[in-house]
Amino acid sequence: MFYIQLTSCISPQESFGIISLDILHESVDNKLIANEPKYDAIPPNILRRMSKAVRMGVGAALPILQNKLMPDGIIISTVNGGKEDCVKFLKQISDYKEEMLSPLNFVNSMPNSISSQIGLITKNLGYNITHAQQGLAFEYSMIDASNLLFENPRRTYLLGAVDDISSYNYSFETKRGCYKKETISNISLYGSISDGSIAGEAACMFIVSGNQKDAIAKVSALDIFYHDDPSIVSDRLANFISKHLPEGEKIDLLITGENGDNRILKYYESCELKMKEEVSIVRFKHMCGEYQTSSSMGLWLCCQIFDAQYIPIHMLKRAAVTKKKYKNAILYNNYHGVQHSFTLVSMNY
Image 1: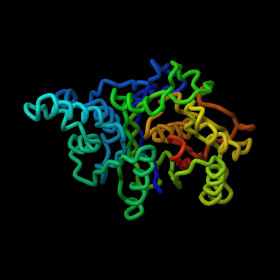
Image 2 (image 1 turned 135 degrees about the vertical axis):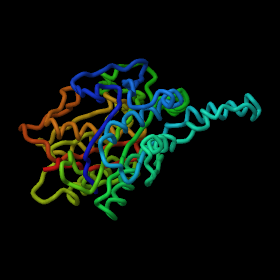
Image 3 (image 1 turned 180 degrees about the vertical axis):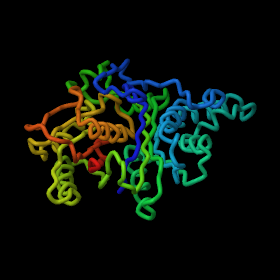
Image 4 (image 1 turned 90 degrees about the vertical axis):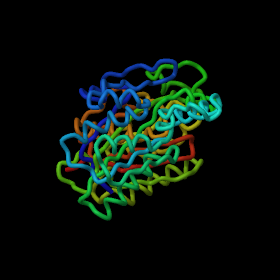
């Protein structure tokens, strides 16, 4: 599909600038809030007009766009980005009877405001698109990038995902039963047996291309589907590995989006049963919380594990029987028990 050349991430953890994944910041009121930097690369007069989702997306993208050739396009996925400003703008229309409206909320009210701001600041006039397909938005953006690179492997794209916790989407998702009713810490998230998870947010960016040279990792295959039967999901995983894993290679790592929601734990456990004892199993949503494009955080963490050949103890659910090099990983994410994705990620060697 494509090679990952550079990565950047703004999340609730120490993932931007000096990366330290051993440190685990704790959630507050069932929310994991992003640990935002100072955004020195964004001009102050532009920064103050940005919504949170926009500044997180731009702030994560600029460090890997500097001192690099201009990418041929910008592909962003987001579901919550722009919703808060959209609600504010609609409220202004009602309150002021369509008069004396502020343009700021209107400008930031659409999901594509993130990709467009990145394009404006970097003066990138190439392909620019935003994907917003709920829990599979980031997966569709990966398919988009893969198709473009299949046509022209020499090109380079900025691929990313951004979602934030706004009062609007938090209230909406709470009413849908997505979050836990009781207050719980992310540190003890996986010990919970109740419904729901904790809210999260992050911005993850990747420079991707068809060039293998100096790449961190390769996204080799992707499978997305809808189903509510755990046995069908686990069988699909087995078929996915059989079809796409190169002959002579083995899976070393299973990265799952287990999120403490008792209702969907059965899907993750069914897939774990397909993994032999030589496969390490890790989880990541205690680091970023649950949100629609959280699989991007899983991919970013996979790149970190490949680069350091190290897994923080708080991520590890099951260690492999024998210690070995992490070369091939399966990233499995599940959203609301019906949207599933498998991503095969391999270390570039």
